[in-house]
Length: 604
Image (tube, rainbow, N blue to C red):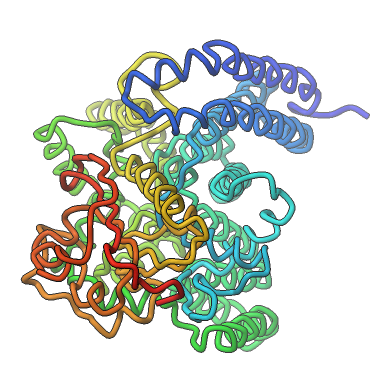
């Protein structure tokens, strides 16, 4: 059989991809694990963290092999249908392979540490897998998680890969989702624009976007949201109502505010199919009802306890805070580079200024240029979530912003096509053509500028991200291990305002002073403004420690500086068992132990 177009170039294309993959594989040996660890040690990274470097390189090799297999299979199946000339097709599919391998590099070569809140989810999974309980603390019936689907995926993976720690499993799940999203983005943009080059740009932007790198490392559910949104958008484009309905339901099970996405897709379904749309939604709605029923039986509610805790225990954020934060996020990766390396305060302030106004331009560009079909649907969803989150104005955690994560991958390819047409238009003014050409180069330069996580030569420049906020996780692990030495049976209550890592490494009962998983704390809410230090999200209410008498308290200094530390009972009844210096928001983190031996040894 004779293939037309680029189809007969498949074997050379796969051969080129093998060469590119070989270069990425060489990074395992050049610079290699030892040289990378030595370079990272110069940044004052804890030796406990550096122990994760060899494992990261091992996972990198495995995932690179997976990516090579996926790239070869994609090329073999997709290239045979390509109408591009052979030379262009070779360049296109080789470029796609390069960015896929770069995606693997920047996600796999990371320390196996997640965001603190991810460890709350992990404790639920560990309890389920070990048949301990469906609760965080057995018997308390507090639903401290919000992403049901994420936990449902982690649980069987934890059963199968018992020898791996859950932070590694969660990062690996996110990396797998990113590979899937890479190709979904390519197919979506190509279907919408009929331009494979624009599609390759969209996929490359997904691989380059620093937010995706950070959230893959963070271990939360943002990447699952992105993947489900892409499937929904493809379903809308190809008019597959069942696909749209099912993945809209999955989005609801991934994030509570996914209900807004499902509402929008229901409106789309009704406009397209009227009452016939009910057939598509019957199954997904039935599944949601079953899940809701199980939650009511198990926890007594479908409302996550973290909502209750945050609404009662957290101080109110400044008005319009979320609107500013979302606009800054929208600017990142599109019109302004997202720089996550340490910066001079003045330079950081100037960058934030441009991020804010760049985000405003991005929002306007999304509404103007994503103006047809599934792209119009996504632009409406972006505006809807912008309004919803701005009005609700909660404290924004990074995974809350997953709804905007597709903006660079969908907007910039469309802008590229429009700018390219403007630059090549012979009837256009010369100044407009020059402006369009310069803007294309500027948008491309942003992607290059924002890649380094630290200004250094070699592999550590774009991998193994670490920061002061992550250093706190190491301290919490050390504090948990110290508490285990003081209480080897792990029966005593440990209280803390940030419980994630602590609850992962200390398996005894945890008292969450933020109220996310502990009902007992809510009755003491709200914390007084008089005991608030700076802009802290909440403060330790002294009465919770006085009445509930936990044996251990692990806290950053600022949580109790104006309240708990000034009380007579705390000075009398508690001693500093260990202090961990860390000048991020205060002088460091304290492990307190109750002096008397009457601290409770069961759940508070």
